[in-house]
Length: 211
Image (cartoon, rainbow, N blue to C red):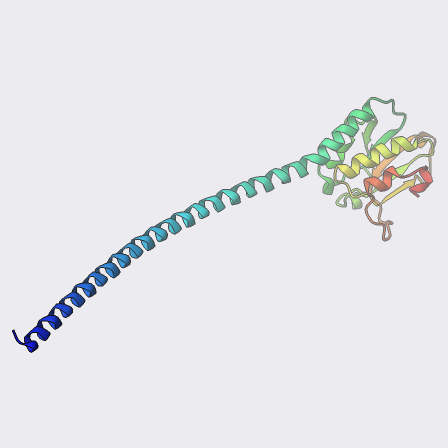
C-alpha cells in the first residue's frame, strides 16, 4: 500500500467516524425534540385542564355570590319587620293612654297598618280628606295629653315600617276628646323638611322638639 492509499484509507475512516458522530448527534437532537414535544403536549393538556377547572371554580364563585346577594336582600327586607316586631313586643308590655286615629292612604298599602299593629294602642280609622287619599302618610299630629314616650313609639314604628314622616306637630284645634289622640295622616305643608330618621325621633327630649 502506498502512502497515497494509506492517506485515503485514513480519510475514509475519519469521514466514517464523522458520519457516525453526526448521525448520533442527529438521533440525540431528534430524541430531545420528541421529548420536548411530548412535554409540550403534556403542559398544554394540563393548561387546558386548569382552565376548565378555573371556569368551573369561577362558576361556583359566581353562583355563591348570587346566593349571598339574594340572602342579603332577604335580610335587608326582614330587618325592618324584625325591628318593628321587637318594638311592638316592648311597647305592648306597657300600658298606653294615647289613642291612634289613622287616615288610610292608597299609596301606603299595608305598611302603616302593619306598623301600628300590636303596639298596645287603641287604633281607629278615619275618612280624612278624599283629595289626599292617593298621597303617602307623612305626618303625625298629637293632642296636648299625649306622652313623649308614646309619640316616639308610634313614630319609630312608622319609620321602620317604611313610612316617610316629615312632620310631627300638635293638633291645631284640639277638641276635648282629642287630648290623648295621635292622628296619622298627610299634610301638604311640610316645606323642605327631610324625612325623619329613627335617630332624630329618639333624640327628642320634649314634645316641642318635634314642632
